[in-house]
Image 1 (spheres, rainbow, N blue to C red):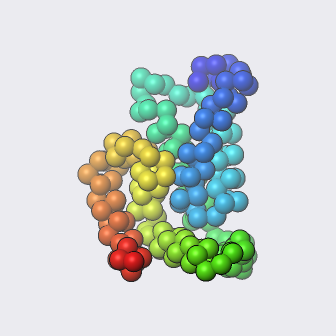
Image 2 (cartoon, rainbow, N blue to C red):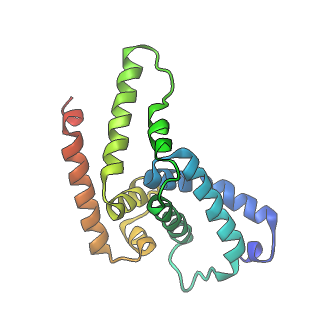
Image 3 (cartoon, rainbow, N blue to C red):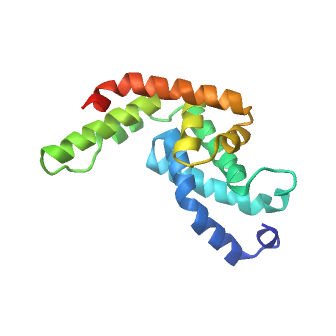
Length: 174
C-alpha cells in the first residue's frame, strides 16, 4: 500500500489482480446484478488508489477486511438507490442463458430460486452472509468490515441461514 500511495501502478495492478475475484463475489452477493457488481469493484479500486495513504496496518484490521468494507458499503449504497427504470431489474431477471436439456433448465431454476432467496434477505443479513460465504472472511473480520460486534454478526448469520433454509427447504430435501 505504501508503493500504491507513492503512485506505483505495477503494485496497484498486482493488488487489483489478486483481489478482483473476491470483491466481485462479494459485490454480486449483495447487489445480485453482475453489471452493478462490476461497477462497484471498479469504484472500490478507484477508492483504494486515491486513499492508499489512509491504510495503516497498525490501526486497521486485515487488508482484505478493509477493502471488503469499502466494497460492501458501496454495494449497500447501490441497493438503496432507487432504480431509474424499474423494468431494468425485471429484464435482467428474465434474461438467462440458453439451457440444453432438462438438467440445465432445472439448474437454472434452482439458481434463480437461490438468487431470489438471497435478494429477499434484509440488507444487513445479506451483507453478513456475503462477507462470510463469498468473500470468505472470518466472523471477526466480517464484523470489523460491517462495523459491528462478532456476536451481532453471528446473529445476522444465524437469521440469514434460517431464512434461506426455510425458503429453500424443498431443494435441500431433494
